[in-house]
Length: 112
Length: 114
Image 1 (cartoon, rainbow over the protein chains, first blue to last red):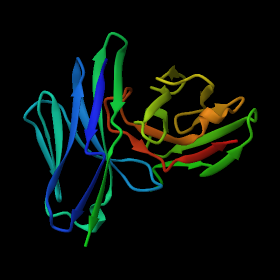
Image 2 (tube, rainbow over the protein chains, first blue to last red):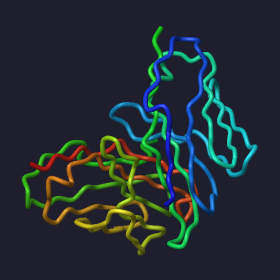
Image 3 (cartoon, chains in turn brown, purple):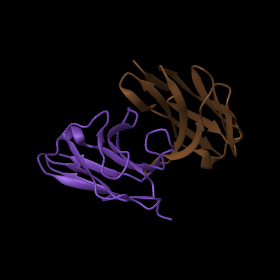
Image 4 (cartoon, rainbow over the protein chains, first blue to last red):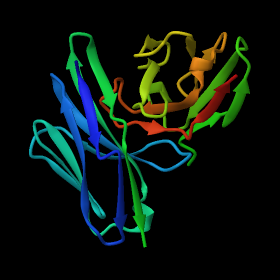
């Protein structure tokens, strides 16, 4: 069964304390991986797409990396405004066709 | 730049009532989607429309119907609401004709069925 697991479920950081969020997957036919940010009461907002192992993307304090089994979202020197839920989604092709499977998310809280 | 607009933002229904959730996008995107988000679960696809005039079932289509009214608008209808349909519903659009393009989401409709 295709699965996407995000860890930890929740993460509390102090401002400036760097850390990483993990998205691991057991899927066949990986075609890509997406990261989204979701603020409370809002819809998810697209951050990055990664297509192949070794690929990296950066945006401000965020850097996303991809291996054959997992992706990391590294947050460098976070600020309180980085507090949000971060979702990963895996694009895959299986016997049923092409599908996008979302993880449950990691809720990040950054305090000043 | 409105992006994806959903109405209403909040709704309370009684079991058995019907309603339609409205969604419109102004980005000239080909594909539109309806997702539901429940506590402790990832976003799940209800229905999608890869282009004007076509619709397909997603992972959890039972109890729902959709209409792609034109390129801009994609509505979701609950014919006979059930408590299990209490959820936050998100409409999304993308420029491609499949799920491989980044999704642009609306801000959701929070539905409670009593």
